[in-house]
Length: 305
Image (cartoon, rainbow, N blue to C red):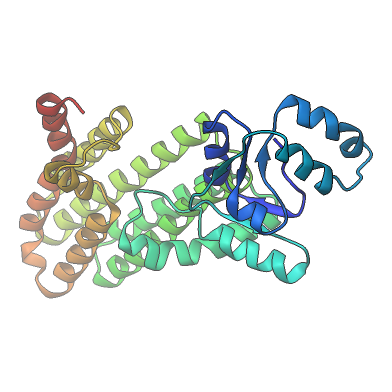
């Protein structure tokens, strides 16, 4: 494979070239004058002297591509030629639009990703590792849980804000890993563990606050926290990647952070306007925390996915 130094290309743009298993070039890259190709060993050997001596090889490459049948790959992967600082800024801006996740919700795209990109830029500039960002997310998330455990409406509202900061950091750790090609199994487990501790801690804190305000709800907080742990285990064991029907789509929505936001916002409003209703709300929270893993188990048993 030949990747020009003046070209920014993402993995989704490169992967289809290998899938062709033949001499192939990426259409958008070739049109820009900086071809991204998979070339045969014969073509590479013909260019090797020039490549080794850092001499321009564009014309020789074009000749090599003209010798045999050439497949053309067209897809939505990012391919952008960089020839000056202005083009580099455009490439960077485009690159940051590709580092989201397939499971991002509308709120993720509208808020979390917009903020996390700035955190990610700063982390990369400072050489901060993805795992360090994950740990920072965990610390901030535990601060959010402490805020929710303080039985006042002001601290509950502050908890929502701090929780949002933890989610931004949680988005940023994956972005840093993808941009620096430092994704790892340890990082994945650390991310899952941190998320689970944060969400279980917040739900337990809500139960503690309910008990402090109304005298009931602590046990429900513990039940809810166990549901968070069970849901995380099921999500890790059976990733929601093959549930295209309506039931599967509904299950995926149960596991999204948007529902968690609705929960903590509802709790904060209840703290302010109807504190006596907190135990009833905790029943809903406790049941809802188990909804994902129970539904996912049913889907697995009945549909095998």
